Image (cartoon, rainbow over all chains, first blue to last red):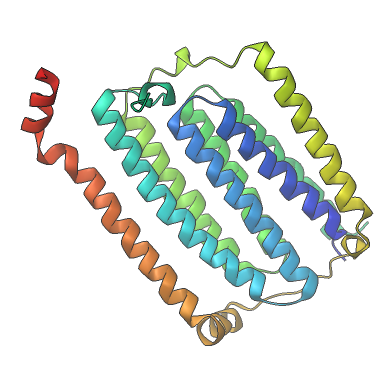
Length: 100
Length: 176
């Protein structure tokens, strides 16, 4: 007996909201990418919890794929940030409104 | 209240606290290191939920590889993070109101759902059985994910290479 499932849902929801706040509020490309990581982690927590609730292993296998997707996203995202930094010398999203 | 629930609430506090510290730090290195603590907490939560293999992967991939990659990028760039300013109050208030309404409705929905009141039972997914399950039932997804990782590798290589390959073109762009 650990806890009711709703507590896991609330924990993951708050974590997801924190990631969203980090992504929207911070004005730095690196913090935006960190916000995406926090949100993916919240999704992973909820999947492991539901995998325990139904005593099935599907949730855990999806978490494995979330790890792979997080790795791919971070490698491409950080390469893009480095590329953008070389172009303009800044990681502020306001400096990249090239289409304006 | 069993010892498992005490551990769960302690870990939840640890995760939420360190994540809140991480998203509010102005220094990016401090933010990344607080987030490493948060991911260690998540790894212990996975272990509590009976997924020891995923706990190990969380420490190796998230806390080990991804966060160290972030740390390297932050260290290599000369960033002026002190200039970062928050939004004016006029934009803050409506956003905060919508966020609080979202939290209230979300918690209400979760609590009113009868199936979420089921108490979790402790169980353990043995890493060997988990691996057997993955490669018997989910082999196609494994192949797709490996292709995705290959695409990401090639994309990162191309993105990292382009600006060093043609410095002449960049110089001429600067002249234009």
